[in-house]
Image 1 (cartoon, rainbow, N blue to C red):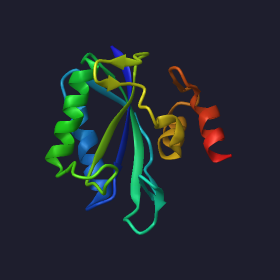
Image 2: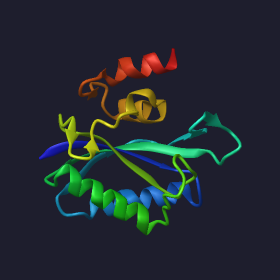
Image 3: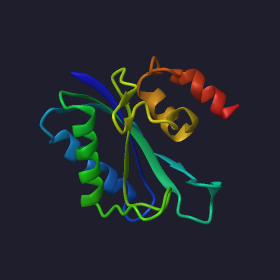
Image 4: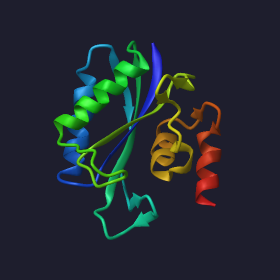
Amino acid sequence: MTRAVIATGANLGDRAGTIAAAIERLRATNGVAVLAVSELVETIAIRPDGPDDSHPSYLNGVAILDTTLSAASLLAILHAIEDDHGRTRTERWGDRTLDLDLIVFGDLIEDGNLVVPHPRAHERSFVLGPWLSLDPDAVIPGRGPVSALLAAVLA
């Protein structure tokens, strides 16, 4: 089994309902055991130029799971769940019905085209805060303790 951390987010439609449905789909996936799911937090939209309150706000959270799947297989499942919930990928950091990001996959640092840990997770309070609420000892491989990373982001 490999421990993985998934960040969830949505800023269009029934945000909470869509995230809950995505988590249930993960629970029903062979080779995936969802161990913990954080409370959802409301956050301002982040666009390429920074925070932007002219776009709908996000609900964000984190799920911790164990899996027998490869990183690439898990990522493919996350993308399929996003697609099934109407996710479009026409604009970088655009509004979305569902966003499922693979944040950590064991100690894996890179797997072909997949870079894990997620390259911006250590900068995102909307990932770090919910994750820390589930696991006070969480660490991002190569970056350090989530508690220290969150403190640095909030400083």
